[in-house]
Length: 173
Image 1 (cartoon, helix red, strand yellow):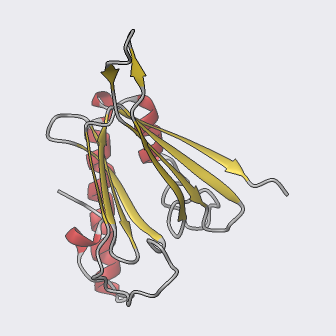
Image 2: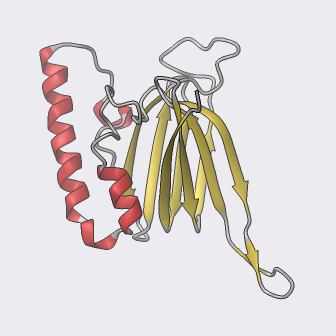
């Protein structure tokens, strides 16, 4: 179940009713995060609960970030490199264009990277996925970290993994 993603909240505008509905969903999401605090890796929990994560005035906020790169790799071990895992790395240009967030999903169990032509916003050429709108961290049915992301032009990514590492790097001036 999503809490603050559009599939749960639905269409929103600036009406008082919509703002109250969003605030209620936000409180439910925060309570949900607290409910599994002891069952999620520390790095993923810190990412999910970071004060900057949803604060659009913070330069590290993910809202309105743009995807710069997405890398899916298979790190390997063993004499013949036969022990394999999946890893996803994302590099985002921050919403103020003055830094990058790097996300690394370790030991990925499943992922879905869906980009569709349908969107509540008219698709335009040369815009890629569009702005990162919203994301949620939840526990999967298998009790792993689940990160779901919505983008302006209809893309939706869902990544199930053992942990999420993140780093913020200011751009060199």
